[in-house]
Length: 263
Image 1 (tube, rainbow, N blue to C red):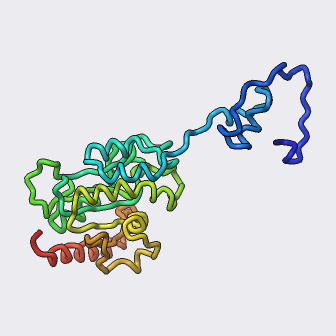
Image 2 (tube, rainbow, N blue to C red):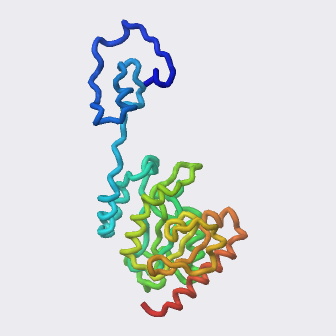
Image 3 (cartoon, one colour):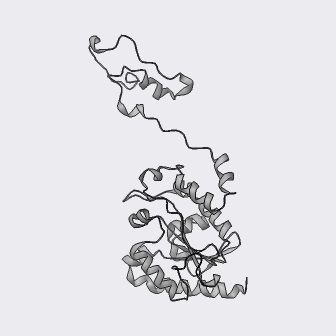
């Protein structure tokens, strides 16, 4: 393999073992891996000794997720290794809130605090979101047995269930692998309205890469459920002057739900 790259390799004959170690048959390993494995152990790079197993085929994974109940879905998300984000997570950030909620709030990707707590919207972002929702008579503090009508209950989720590495931006592959979990959450929850907070939430739900400014102020649709696009709490914490725009979006969401009439 090194000769094909134009590199000359010299090694004293005395240092080579008398017989090469057994290697995988060509059918069991890619040619490049097999070529490296054929080298004597003294010349073999350590990295080739650890070969990651392939990801399970989507043809078996997706139908299974589509039929899971809440507990099965949570366990599956916690054990998911469909993309590289799983390597850096402490906890899978599945979702939180009563399953009877009429409101679904979808955030972007877990941060450090969300990853540590295993909950979406942690720390200052959660405090700001809670204040925003209480301003329209909603609550994110209600547990499954809370004595609140469903129209005031909120379920929290996120576009990604695993924390991306610091400084990185997840791409379409990661969003695609996580989308089946969010899609099944929506099927089980049957929300009456969805609040998409941030670019990744919008891309996952609407399949759009348009700037949020062009998508705000309108009622969108996700499989028959109205979707309102707004800004992520983490963004609002860095841009305090944008809170007025987020308030407009909340008012639009509230008016949209009221316009639907009783369930």
